[in-house]
Image (cartoon, rainbow, N blue to C red):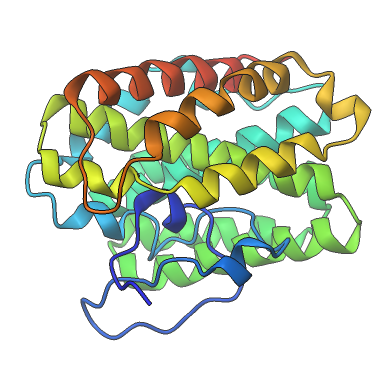
Length: 271
């Protein structure tokens, strides 16, 4: 099995947390894993592992970029679909904060995560866990913080699955994937390194997510932001389906970044 995980795969790993040796990159998803329904929010340790080796990526700068966008603090949405997709976005933001070791950025993301998690899962224990996460960030205990965030992630997944809320699971997954694609393409566009664009190759994952979106219920499919995402999935699939070992051109990277910007904005500004 390939040992260097493409970023898109890392953003949608299964709920079980694999054990990795120090500095060992996570595994890519196998075809069998691609068929499971365990995708939800991006795990903290694996999420941006694939970008750590790109020396020009400045996570502090990414945190500053996120902080300037007022939509990242929005927590009021009328539909569960919008809540789930935005939960995915903000969990990805929290992981950027962890990579940047930015306590303020973590708190901004966790405030939204707490509200949306409680509305979707009704698990009151999450409130205490998120309070602990913020405290650990203030104390600079980033390793312990990752454990807490993972616990929150799994708890929300379990609650959604227990409630048979498959649409929310799908949309939370797609939200996290989109934000990861957006952050990665933004970072790589600002500091273009051809070899680093290989991380964006993940045609199987894009195909899987497209299929999951096609399987949404009528109410979720009718959401404007979902329609917009579905309309762009074939374009994203084409841009990311490059031969193994090949790189993306600057133009294709720019197109992916533009698409991800538009789709993230559609999710963040949903009613």
